[in-house]
View 1 (cartoon, rainbow, N blue to C red):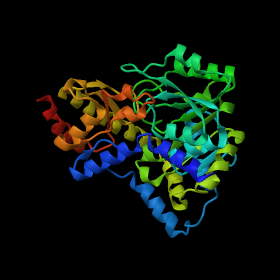
View 2 (cartoon, one colour; view 1 turned 60 degrees about the vertical axis):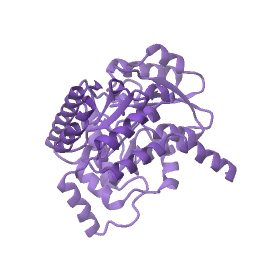
View 3 (cartoon, rainbow, N blue to C red; view 1 turned 90 degrees about the horizontal axis):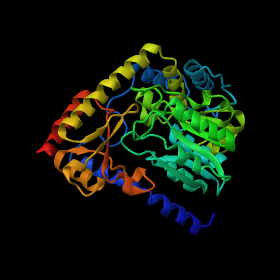
Length: 389
């Protein structure tokens, strides 16, 4: 790779909007704002998981782990997935532990997608999707999920498939819209993928945060196990986003591509944290129920609060994000609104235009995260109430 090519790649990646997130973070710190922008909790996960990490370090689990995951974690992932889906996967050949789901996405693109391959994805999308496609030299075919329903356009999806289509990147529950893809929509995706011999990369990190509808794993649909990589992570479900423990689940021939890239990205994930992740995934069902119920309360709190202030709110069916239309307040675009919000209200939010291939589609929107304590959400709503004036 030449220096010229490296510069072109770096320039292209920098243009995808990461500087926006850096700027919002800087302004949040400068104005001592409540950060409803970035999607990390302002609280820790369960004590028993932290204790398991400390115990693992004390017991000497501090050196390189097996590249594709410590055995106990791979087994725990396989067991949890079977409980949730009914599908059985071999822990040693069909599961790869990565540094968060973000690395799993990157390793999947670098390991399975060739330059010139087309990848279908839905906008708005998690910002790393576009960057990973760019690094792999893939061509993006973008389908817009339009407010207020964010429904899948069947005609647009059918038209997106060509003889160059290699994969479709699915995210359900979906960040940032909060959409949960319906069984009917997933059946359509599965039908087209089988018809055109296309892979599915299914990002399911918010799998335990579904408030309306049902989370259907596309890998469980007829004929889809062999062509699907399911990606997920520990961070969202157990509130340890900084640990960066993720994984891919799928047939050996697909995981082989992920592993080929993963071994040269990071080789392995943090060993003691993998042992703690295994303990987390062995948590009783009561943990998941309490986790879900707590987030439903937070969702309802922020949706109701934003609506009272005057936003046009799109209540999320899943995830811990909510999109709202800021048009009633008269700002030029999402960047101007978010800058005003942090400087004058002391609340940081994310301008979603960077989540769109066509940035114009995000100009009227703002994304809030509600992975915060109820007290902090109430204070943020109180601060934003001045917008109504």
